[in-house]
Length: 508
Image 1 (tube, one colour):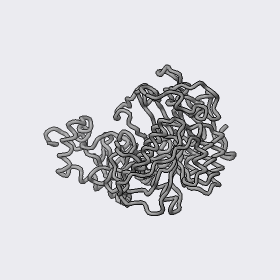
Image 2 (spheres, one colour):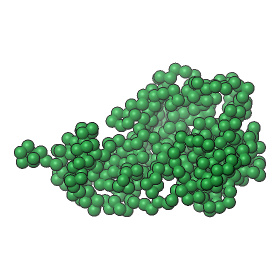
Image 3 (spheres, helix red, strand yellow):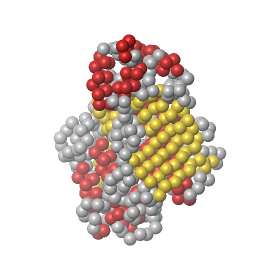
Image 4 (spheres, helix red, strand yellow):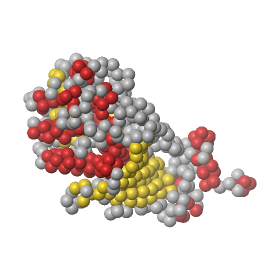
């Protein structure tokens, strides 16, 4: 074939990569003939892939220790999801089989009667329990401070709007309750300074609600980068693309029972400036700077924390942001189109973030795919739930392998697919492998089993409460995340570049 047509393996592989549908079948067939075996051997020996395979624990095991009594503040969409991840639901859309955490939901607090009732209804069923008995219903508290003062609560989950986080964390620390707090840690930079001081000196177990700290691919990516497989990294790109009403936080549409008599609006506002009640503000609070940090705090936070896990970036030296309200012409004051550049001169790289709530298209990737791109001098990485590493066609490190056709710029030469039959890391992706990173990061794999990452994050927190230790969502990572995201918000609002003063630990 090569002699007659002048077609070598490298050309053939590149051609397959450009024809994904046919490549899925032809590439699979060729891989069975050993077409890729020599390439895998050549790369595996250099990278030492076996060191990336890690031991897994049995996720179906029951947590040992005394019963832990939990309270939750806020049973909106995220609060409801957290309760499902703990196992509290009679029926669930989450088809995971996890071990019993040996917890009881004994307190629910929400200013919206409908949500409070939903929370206490969920508390009666634990589908992870080996027993089918109906549990005692959680008590409903009208005010979260009453719950924190209760002797029936050992730990509290804070899934309230961001403008309440700081005060609730402070009050929980004073009450001696362990804390699981959703991101963003605070609404303002000043509150972040305060919570950093309070939590650093608190005698409780704190877990920051970045559940993707449990995402296996980030652990593997960290090791790949430590092996300097990409060469020198100079640019990292992240994004969020959405194009629907819910994604744009129009969550009041189609809602029943939005009668203000069912909502303690004054308590919900707290210290925020008084505004008349509207379902739009209550259900779509992420659209307003009075209650949130906008897109940086709610969406970029996930992307930043992922990159911070694999590279220990910390707080950027400076942030420049721009954007506007260009599509959703409603009552919002946070932008629906946003871009920001985060500069790290000490690490000689720039991290970028772009977001739109008016398009779910992301170029070559699946619609809405949450993919981070890390560009190095020798290769670049697509990082999501899966990992693809693709050589740079002008790489000096891999020049010989490129010349010999061992690797190609068109096909990943290193992949990580946690749910694959191969068990994870592999060298040289044949054309049968999908060239995209998975959409969404709500689950990972442990021992080949699909696992809810929120469950893992909650379990890590609960195990630390019982057995000691520090969960992965530390006060340090929470501080770095909150400061970084709110620097972007500040840059947008004040229309200027903002900087971090590492000596005085202040944003200027």
